[in-house]
Image 1 (tube, rainbow, N blue to C red):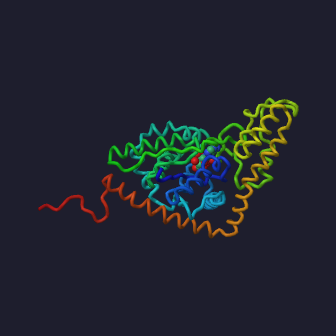
Image 2: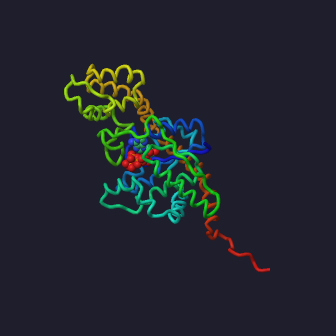
Image 3: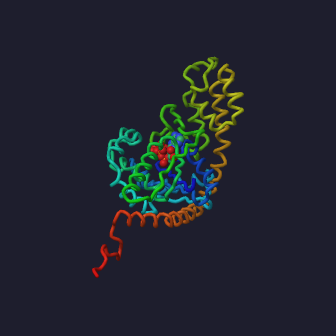
Length: 338
Ligand code: AQP
């Protein structure tokens, strides 16, 4: 692994699915790779779905703030805003010319999101092409993501392969890297993947009262109708969340056996989960409050990140412009006769 790239959309509040599935992994990779760990708040992706322009800048800033509060150190890694490095969209255009439309219409995320929207913009279809550009612009070989993104990373590999075959070796074929403990965090509805656009999230910066209210009303094992009914933890959303936040011995030695013999009720089990969750989220929320009081720390970090990202992206884009045969400024496409 030489260089990693990953992104997060500012399409709503950063939730525990993003945190467990992606951000925790980013933090660990940042500690190992330093400035070869590159992360972007991908705002051009967020506008592929219905959004409020009055909120986008704030959400973008908040997403950066949440990542830093969660432990991503912008002095160690590169953290920046996608739209501030225009080569992302430029490379995406080049890649659209190399991507069969059929490859895009079969993407599961496109089909799911298109089914939920009354207006389906072409941007939603092109989303994975922009994602390929995000990754390949930095010649990243590793992409730490949640399971929902695996299909997109496979497409990125195909785009790299096709480009290299036509224009000469340029891009690596990147590999996805999953956080094996939480590749697909279920939503608080207990049905779909936790997703900002579905509205089934627990935000990492959400107020503790609001988090408790969501846990309190969340579904549990349907077999436990009365307090005295024994449960099967592996069927229960709350048990799954315990595996993410509670110490393994507590899950193994208390939660699982006590649920099976109806020794604890669901509300008690949810209380224990809430305590474990707040142990992890509490310090993140405190750091977020400190950053809100000194927002210049976030804007300065993003500005430094923009410069560092641009320094990598610009020469790669120039290499692409030359390889695909564009007329470069001041150049002549033939040698003078004689
Ligand atoms: N539920 C999840 N479990 C594990 N990982 C997840 N990720 C998202 N949801 C889960 C991972 O978080 C990273 C950033 O995701 P994103 O915000 O860029 O896009 P997304 O996957 O489309 O996330 P959402 O919340 O579902 O956003 P919307 O609803 O706006 O599309 C990615 O690595 C993702 O895999």
